[in-house]
Image (tube, rainbow, N blue to C red; front, side, top):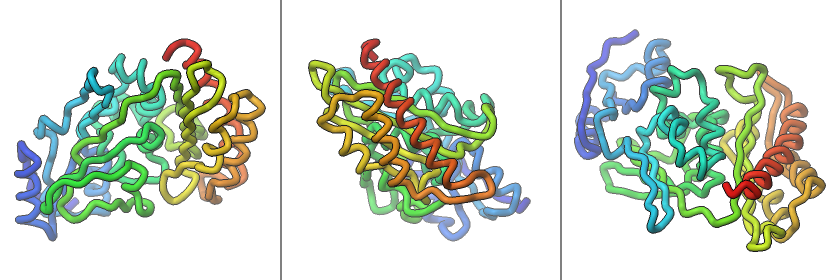
Length: 293
């Protein structure tokens, strides 16, 4: 492993200044669960690692009770989200995802921002944030800008971040009443496994709990980047949600996916899992709405 200098700024501005001073050979690091592996295995050879761990504003998890907006700092760990009763009760799709990432040790160190910026097609954290219409706030040498979480991703391991930019936080808009959501992943084993497919579903019903007014069907490992099955979503809106309707939506989502054969799984199997789990997660949404969650 190549030797490097370890810098620990205490503000976003200081981190960006460090990066600008060493831009050709510097890399940011959050929890380090991905970056340190890449450094050890020679995939990344920085002269400077800029740790973001002491930037307090990036580690805050807060819900504005007046507006209903949720703010998740990029340094918030998966374990923090997993242990939050607010997340578990109000954002079950996010709880489902983070509680199944890696091992306990990985969840204690790994951050939601790092999970996004690593930009692997199998990133569990991306799917719920896309389903929840999350917005990413970026800060770099040219100032701040924002984008939808789904628009962060260009290709596997590639994001829209410009050199020196930092993902500061993700904001989630207020969720409508009578909304239910759920996420599941299918892998070859239950623990510490990257998903062969990841499926997140969010449904909002009207005041009579009859008609779907909003639908999100989000897929991981179904395309080069996380995706929404927008045709299947449009199919659900305006309909009474029944198991038969969810089966049709699952078929549409499977057809929209761009799954492929890989050493870890086949395309046909991934499509079948989409068909099955869109229905299951849709039924979970209905159950949560009935429970008042």
